[in-house]
Every structure is written in C-alpha cells, then in structure tokens.
Amino acid sequence: MMQPVYICDYIRTPIGRYGGSLSGIRADDLGALPLRALQDRHPAIDWAEVVDVVYGCANQAGEDNRSVARMSLLLAGLPETVSGTTINRLCGSGMDAVLSAWRRLALGEGDLAIAGGVESMSRAPFVMPKATTPFSRASSVEDTTIGWRLINPVMQRLYGTESMPETAENVAADFGISRADQDAFALRSQERAAAALASGVLGEEIVPVQVPQRRGDPLVFGTDEHPRASTLEKLSKLPAPFREGGSVTAGNASGVNDGAAALILATEAGVTRHGLTPLARITGGATAGVAPRIMGMGPAPATEKLCAQLGLTPADFDLVELNEAFASQALAVLRRLGLPDDADHVNPRGGAIALGHPLGMSGARITGTAARALARGEGNRALATMCIGVGQGIAIGLEAA
Image (cartoon, rainbow, N blue to C red; front, side, top):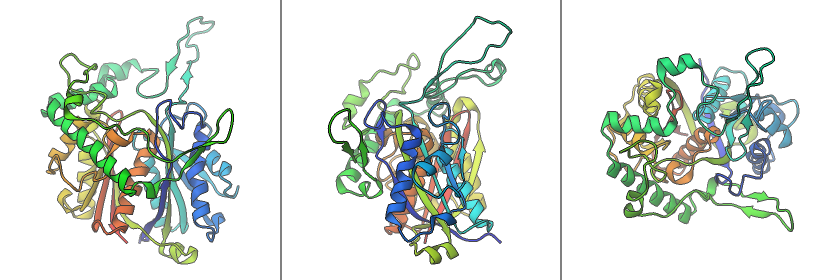
C-alpha cells in the first residue's frame, strides 16, 4: 500500500527576465538558493535523512550539466551523503521531479525528500556538434535557449519540427481560438498577477536573492520582474510574427526566464519526526502524449488520465494552476475540459504569461503555489497541469492536508 505523502513547504526565487536580474547567476548556484532557504526555514530537520533531491531542468547543456540537482545540493550545504538526480521532461521537468519524489516516498523508500526545478535561460549556451564524417571541416553552432536543435531529419519528415510559437498558432487554427480571446486571457493573467504581487500573497513564496555587483554591495532582488501592465488596446497592436495572418504575439505568450524552486515532501512519519506542517497531500499524477504540432494540448489528456485515476472530473477541482505557455493553448485546454475562459479558480494569481516560464522551474512553481493556496483554505482539491514540447502533457492532483 502506498503511503500518504505531503508537501510541507515550498519556496522559490523571484522570476527574472531574459538577460535580467538573475542572468549573472550560474544555473547550479541558482538551484542552490531555494535549497539553502529551506534549510534556514527548518533548522530542526535532520537533512541527512533526505532520501533524494530531485530537480527538473530542461537544458543541461551549460552550467547546469553534470546533474544540476547534485551540484546545487552540495553548493547549498546539504550533507554530501544526500543524493541528487536531474529530470528532463522539458517544460514539465519540475512537476515530474515532484512526482518522482512522491513515488519514492509513497513506496516506502524514505520519509523525507526535496523536489524542485531550475532554469537559467539567459545563460543557456551555444553548442557545436561533433563532426559526422572523418576529417570534416564543416561546423555549425546551435542556440540551446529553447526549441529544436540538431534536428533529426526523420523526425522532421514524420512529425515536423515547428517552433513553440508555431505550435501555438496550430492550436489557435485547429481549435478556433481567436486573437481577441487570446489577448483577453493574457490581460487577465497580467491583472491577476499584479493584484497577487500587490497583496503580498506571491511574496510569501519568494526568497529574495542577493545579486553580486562589480562594485559595491549586492542588490536585493525580491520581486518577479516579468509582469507588465497592459491594456487590450496595447495587446491588440502587437505584431504576430510567427505566421502570416497569425494571432500569437509576445503579449499573449509566456516569457523566456530564469528561476528556481524547491519543495519539501514528507510521509506522515517524516512530518512527525521533523516537526513539519503539511500544506497539501499529493493524490496522483499522470502524463500523456499528443501530436508534436499541437503540443499545447497536452494538459487536456493528462488531466483526463488523472481524473480517471482519482474518480473525479475537471469540475471537481476547486483550484486549477494551468501553465500558460500560450494563451491559445490554455484556452483550448480549458474549453476541452469544460471550464470557462475566465474561471476565477483557474490561475487566480496569474500565470506564465505574466510571471514568466523558466522551463525546469515552472512545474514546481505551479505545484507549490497550488499547495500553498489549499493551505490558506482556498479549496479542498487542486490540479496543476502543463504542456510540454515535442507533444506531451503532465498533471498532478493535490488535496488539502
């Protein structure tokens, strides 16, 4: 029998813009920040009892190579006896890290684990492939920030290798998502995020970061810097550069960002032994595949699989955190699940269009945000779900502790 597993704390860095406040911090150092913060918040925990640190990271081609989970936990000062592993399910990596840690504890492998994710998209490197023939003088350089590189020609022929914005255009066309509806959704995200930041509710999950300067004292970076105040008029005037006659813009899409997040997971025995207070219980998780050309639809079948596991319907969740890769895919998913475009319980604090989308971090962020909301009494059940490049979706279910 699987043991109940609880999320007992969640903390994250502020989310930085591309080339912004966090761009000078290495990915492994960035990943260490929430781990160090968790240790500061829980001095009574015996950290040597952590069965594993599981981190999501989508790139792993630069300073995040050689298992950023292991490097970050060592840099954070966790005991060297604690192991760490890094998961790459692209955009779903951070959520998959939570599910992986949950399964280990649920199966009795330990009583305490840490899960999370990190991404420094600002510091994603260029890569140069090895020569494919002896004595070759040919060379190429690929940008690893986001999207396809070193493309397999068979993949190109069978499935296409459209960019993420192009897949969002495909979803808009295939499912009849208008530009006006996308811009309205994007504006709601910005307005809700602004209200949450002003109220301090988002600040509760943020640990300020000291950013070293060439001269003088470090600057304290403590607020998400991606949100931008806007209007429907401004959003409607933005160009749609990804397709002639298209509808996907910089204003109704998520950002390219930097950030890290971490969660403490514990069994009932771990909660008691370490004096923890549960925020929420993990009830299940699911993944699903879809055609790569409409990768944004992945949350719909993943959520349907999760609902089948739990004997629920999408309407049974009091809170939904749906990662906003693009407004077009978020709206298409909501409509397939039978939820209103402007549902108050979907992304009530805004989403990735406003806050940003550091790929490996985002799944941990929306899971932790949902857990904190349940602990505040915002409902009994929560769903967190997201789309994944190359055509996948992932979902996790939570219940008030």
